[in-house]
Amino acid sequence: MPKEQANWSPYDNNGGTCVAIAGADYCVIAADTRMSTGYSILTRDYSKICKLADKSVMASSGFQADVKALQKVLASRHLIYQHQHNKQMSCPAMAQLLSNTLYYKRFFPYYAFNVLGGLDSEGKGCVFTYDAVGSYERVGYSAQGSGATLITPFLDNQLKSPSPLLLPAKDAVTPLSETEAIDLVKTCFSSATERDIYTGDKVEIVVLNADGIRREYEELRRD
Image 1 (cartoon, rainbow, N blue to C red):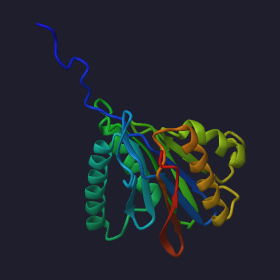
Image 2 (image 1 turned 180 degrees about the vertical axis):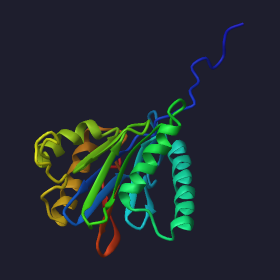
Image 3 (image 1 turned 90 degrees about the horizontal axis):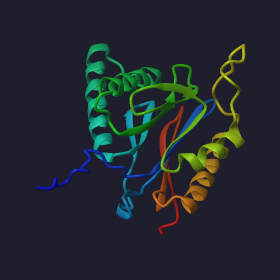
């Protein structure tokens, strides 16, 4: 008797692209709102951005069921932290928590590719980029998801930060103003949408600064 469903996988890739840019006193995190599987669009209005704390926001692409499970775990861990310490987690602390949470599941990983953005204790923008099993790095900018291979070379060209091997170490923040960073993100997405079928419909842009969090939207191609 032949095997049925021999190629079944517990994972799917729902596509989508996430970008984050850290500035001197702000952080911009953006993601498109299309969720797909194969050649089908499941929804054109799905937010891939999740607020984890007042100064920490995470954008995730990959398998959105795993992303949702990961967000629930982080929310419950953060609630426990708040009860124990009577304060919210800082962005670098949340970055470490996310790394530990992903690494804990390394033998059956969350199929989620995350970028975490926010403000550190000094009010500087910070971006942390991850692989699926928790390896992470603080960077000035990052892209994850199906359009990352298209967007990363463009960001490298526009924002290339100094090598971390150079001493004295330089800050991993970009020299752009907040408005310039938002415009750059919009350019990234409109160009990636032309070449990546899993990126499109709308880009959701979240801006963190000393005044708090605000959201912007920009329409993209819908085909």
